[in-house]
Length: 397
Image (spheres, rainbow, N blue to C red):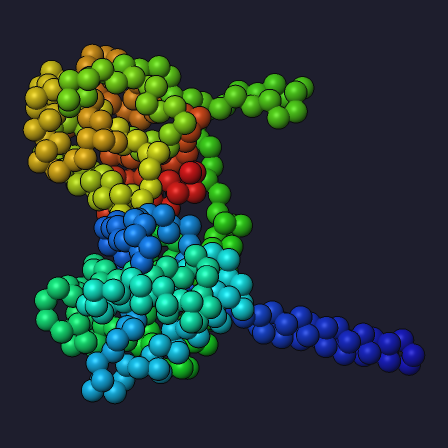
């Protein structure tokens, strides 16, 4: 009888324990990333109230709130004066000051047309005891993402059309992450938005921490190691090479030194996959430029050097609006190119009468790190891989 009672009690406690664990798991909050409203736009520069030139690229390591203010709001404009001003000061003091978000900055453009506007901004900062470089102030700056030009018409009547607000643009605040992506948009005439902005900045910071802690990129290719020596691993590296680019310059593997590189193989007369690959590579180049990412080299080797001369490569590059500064299209000895593809980048390249255009080559884009090791292969014909490639590039930098 005692044994039977013990079994019953064990079942009860066991069931209770299982339910407790299950409820605990169910109660764990699910992390939902902030929405992404798209790229901020091309890099731009503006002059602050002190006369210093500031590049949007210099803000890349920060979460940024962009908005507008005025020191001389029209007298008959009921929405503007103290409420709007107080709200945006509150954004600064609550988010940047008191909460201590170290990587958050506010950029405000004063939309007044006063001749002494910069002096008035200085007075505004002094009066409100703003002495931090975390709140950057400028005057009459054309922020491209607000789709405005204050030189034409009444700035108080300007509507935002770029992001679908259909409201007065001066009411808006945009939240931009460290990747220059717009992650929040707010009508900053409502005090309740402060709590929302605070929460969504916290979510962005959490998203960044979570991404960094779980995201790794493998090292690919053959590797040699001596098991008797701890940590002794020799990874596959891209060997020496030397070819001619679209400008007629001799380019060697030295351009890969301490750089992240993205590589593909193509030929200019290719009838099918090459146009897609080159178009996607151009989109990657533009995306890197828009996000102010440097120290990246793009390299395209032709598998048809007999027809792809320097002149032909230059013509081909210009047809895709290639920026020559960090994208080299290379030609040279065919056997050397093929050997580099097979033994260096580990992808096939060869003449094939049955293949479209007469050449068989890989559709892969190949990611190379600063130590010339292979870190990724991607389908270069798939536009959906662009974001993944850029993300992996940034992870390596």
